[in-house]
Image (tube, rainbow over the protein chains, first blue to last red):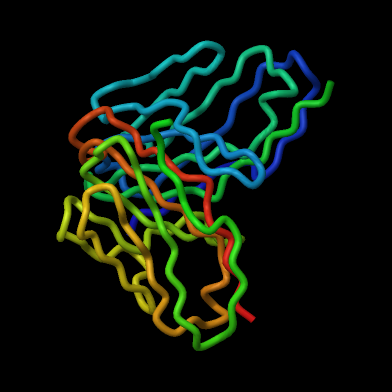
Length: 111
Length: 116
């Protein structure tokens, strides 16, 4: 059974800092990996999707990497802003028909 | 506006009652999904549907029923609600299977369900 772990569970940083969120998964046979953002009381917003054949994806200040063989992904946020405060969720698609989620990292960026 | 909408946003009901959560999407996405989100468990898939009249179980389907008579709607029914089904429920849709394209899942804002 695929398990997804995200470390740390919570992170508080000052504005402007570069930061890395970690995601690990137990079964390397995945189709893709997706990073989401969730704001309080809201649904999930897709940030980046990395296909299994890719090593990384970038969108603005966000960069996500994928190392299938080691079962790891990182989400790098450059020059963090208070508006980046949210919970970040990692999810893998092991079979193409469903997502398995980690429990998320709650990020607080302090002005 | 195009998107995915869930209703109601909040619902309180009693154990043993039947309750239906609604999900509507305007993108004509073929795939739709229901998840529940609980502290300590994250998001878990309840049911999903590949097209109208095609549904399949996810990780935690017991106690739930789904139907998909139209592509745009995917209601979730709790036939006899239990306190363990108190949760936040999210509906999602995607153009195609996650693994066969680069199309992500799009989520609604959720329904917060409390069962007393």
